[in-house]
Image (cartoon, rainbow, N blue to C red; front, top):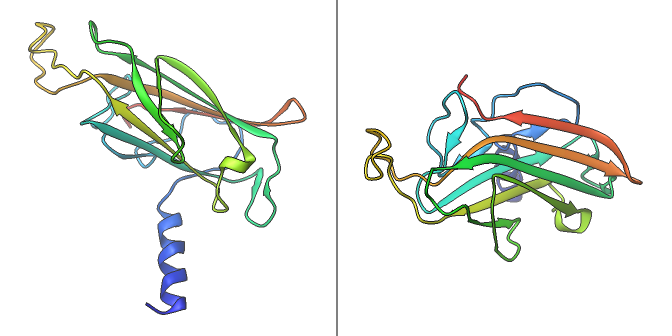
Amino acid sequence: MSLHADLLAKTLELYDIPALLGSESKTLSLARLLTSGWYKADKSGAWARGDTSIVKFRLTGSFNRNTGLRSEKVTVTIEGKYLATVEKKSGIRVNGSDKRDVDLSHFSFDVGAEDIPGNGCIEITIDNYKKKSPLEMMLGGDHRKLSFKISRLTVVWENKGKISHKKVLKFVKE
């Protein structure tokens, strides 16, 4: 592959990753952020599908490709719920970091500038444990194996202890 074709492919790949512009917002369509391992969103969020689910986005606004992240850190908060009677635990990795087992019902974590690549992408990989169907639990007729349902993602850029940008994204049916 030529250098030009390689650069074009990388540019097109980034184009497909939704960018967070670092401005306050109420609701944004998040279908594109749920890159793999998710069912279509309903009125209260999107259920994880399969063993692994991925959320991926790019930081812009307070992120500069040449100088790196101007903010000291970015705090990401995931909100959602687990299917009733399913253990409230999922595995999570951020940009390939070591996996942690956590309750994602309301979970926040910091991403330092050193952990964000030059393209500004953050990839959150969620391992879905102990999936069950509402049908087998006698909670309805849904046969899908479910575990965690994401409803909101909040990204906050901080600089010198002050919030410089905040983005609140709701995973709901459009």
